[in-house]
Image (cartoon, rainbow, N blue to C red; front, side, top):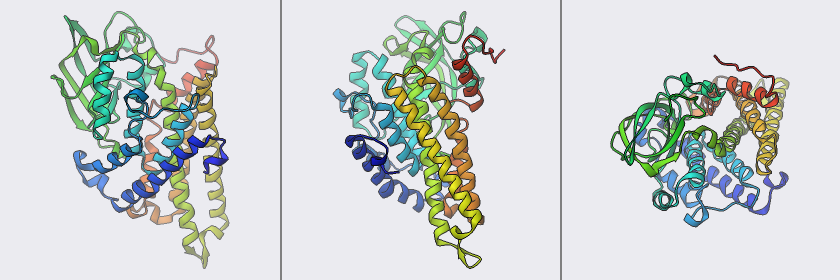
Length: 410
């Protein structure tokens, strides 16, 4: 993709070019030179700090931080589109690394919207000063996850994690798993039930929890099939005492979190698109260079047809990503529905593209050194990230037909 062909501003083109150079010059060489590292290195040593430091120098780790704390401002009315450009490029380099950065961006937006100023003055300077400082959004629990996003607004769907006020503190107990950045984050937004007598949408609160707080622990890194540099994790809260002012949103946390749920789905889809582009670019190079039956692979009709299909599918994803991003930036009434749809379409289409890429590589597609199997593994994760696709389908219909759609739960 050439940014100048997409109708972006000069500033957006500059940001895109910086990201592309970073991916081509830093991320992709690291991935190619360390094919086994994501499997062999323990979670603590998996992603070198130098990559986060390099991203930090470009301001990519701290997107979403208010300008007054050193964050990078966006042109008015362009935030979703610009973040999509960045997420696509970083995803083209490595999806797990992109996930690490995306979580920072999303949590920064949430903190900026709801945290008291005195906490922002503590958190953001610390975050800006330390490239290893990561953030995580701790919502999913062993009992349930995507099914809670219909939402099925009854007490029995409430969080198992509970928070009870004790004087000037809140005491949290529970377990969260499948948390992006969960293994090595320094700050977590933890969701907990604070009113068991009402439904999940009316009785769930969010809290700022720092890793060093007593009663907080990281149980393990979840060893995922793909996106392994993200270090998905499981956390435990055992009588974790959180100061009163660390309560982010009382009772309506799931409703208020919409401020970044919709942008998050665009980021997810854009990151998916980046992985699809990596699959396409690697495959285009392979079929040009390799000979089968006395001629380059690209000259075989079936190869050419499949390569054309991959290109068409990814252009369709790109059109949906940036249409949804523009709708969100412009405050369109159907922006939420578009964000739901692009998440579903991007994840399923990129999975198809990744499978085609493996097939067009022949036997090499399954070999570690070719890199296509990694792209295939990363793509498989997208079907379950930010909620499962089936749950998104139910929400799409509820958005289209709010008066007649079924409950689809219970």
